[in-house]
Length: 403
Image: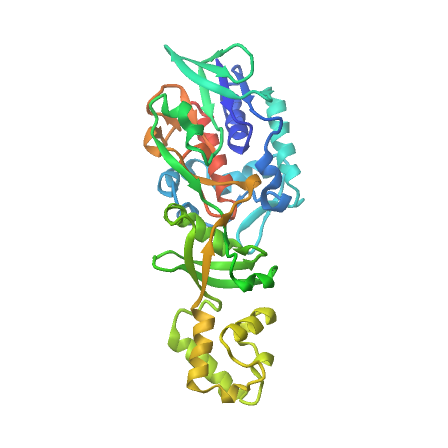
């Protein structure tokens, strides 16, 4: 049996390994269009490789996917985040889970994961072909013919697993649509918010660990670390919001307003009570010298200026009007977003091959027999924190069973 895996990323490697384990006599080949293998694995997690997420239940894991979570829930019953951790650790790659549930190799080096995957394909005898881009795919009986962009002869295979990754361009999926598959329009999923006209950018590098961010005029909200950058806002809280709001924000052409609750206190009365206690216990303290909620000093000084409250004013002289100004700036601070920034190396899209075209029990196409799918080529995407890799491991594992 001849098996082709299109794509040399995480999903492609996992599918190839599983296929060769299941069918040791099969001729399994990974076909990669570029000169690099596992490039996203290399840069993930700042070069540490966020292998998976360490959350405790499949239900909780599935909630990390704005698109595809329901379909993945059953798939995780076959190969979960726990399975991923056991898989790598049984092959000499111990992992650890941070407080935020992100899982990394104990080496804190993505090359450890790459080396493990390369060892496995080498041990099993999986072939790898680099610099060969698939141009077209056609069916002849039960056989699948692949043609290539390079001047090489078309090749015929018994089974093909497509793990070609996501793309922001609709035309990248034409070859799959031509076979009769349904394609969901691709748009960016994980991105940061650009704020070209907002002076808060001068606080770049500042992190607020537990901010509540809301897209004004929608029900979209997210809680998590917020990072100020030289172009705007980033961090897990913002990236999660961008993932769940991917299509809505694309429709707005990435022009919208966000409300930031810097202290994650959605209850006005509780915030009022907390600050009133500060007034009562430290009436002679200057505003600039007493920060509520342990806010970073640079942010506190900035917010006082934005609220037009004198830094030399003492807490006891705030008055009702001043107190309300302070509550408003802490819990309902508004910023104008004009555009987004995506990181090409870790680019994630929503959209791609519709799950309506796939049998999620096997990852086989419902349209074309013997064609399977794995990874981001499908309309599945997760929030930041190891979710996208877990979807790759799971779908690659199931696709590689070639059922």
